[in-house]
Image (cartoon, rainbow, N blue to C red; front, side, top):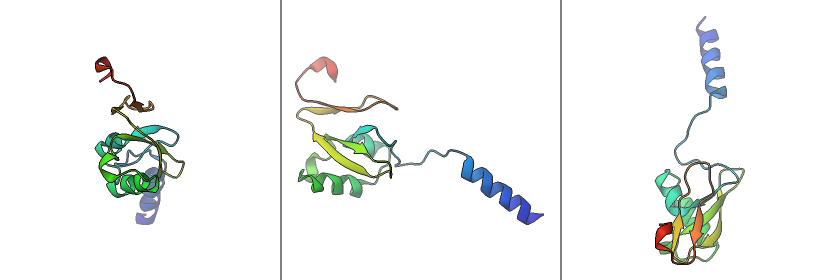
Length: 102
């Protein structure tokens, strides 16, 4: 009986979607600052930025693509700031100054 309950719990856990801290949605573009706020591993953000020769102090002011495996790849450094477009939307760089965009 205990084994059946354990099996049922395991199956339910496997099929129930769970929001994981630090997970990104494959195919979406994220600001480095958004990834940090969502709990994404800061070392992975640093690694992706450094792979593109972006100095570490600018890693949060850049956009990254979320790959199918949940890793990120550097896409672009932002000239002014990075715009968080909200859940389910691609973030983007603000590469010209427009105070209304902030």
